[in-house]
Length: 107
Image 1 (cartoon, rainbow, N blue to C red):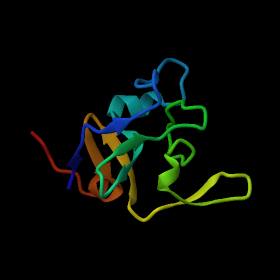
Image 2 (cartoon, rainbow, N blue to C red):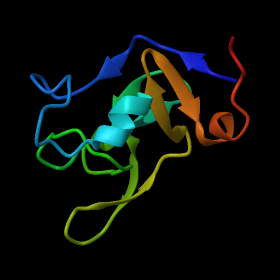
Image 3 (cartoon, helix red, strand yellow):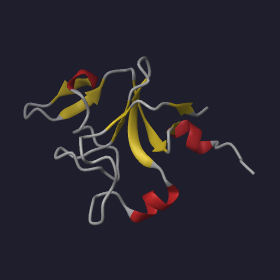
Image 4 (cartoon, rainbow, N blue to C red):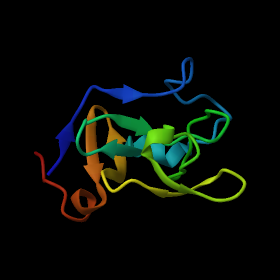
């Protein structure tokens, strides 16, 4: 099942990928961006590097501290709290990994 949310957060000024950025062209063509969603609040965060640049893969670096369950000695995120789900944002729809295995067919 797809979930809709307009509560998407990105670093200010980085709401769209730019030429030379880390988001791949093939991902843009398909329109799927790696993201995380908080199951209770519905808040969605696009995957970002530690510098706030949109990432082409799921990275924990740009997530809010309250979403992180465990960090290593250097402070890097190792695990997320149980309410966080990895998936992809396409437009305003959040797709879980399970959604991608059985996508709805549209005409």
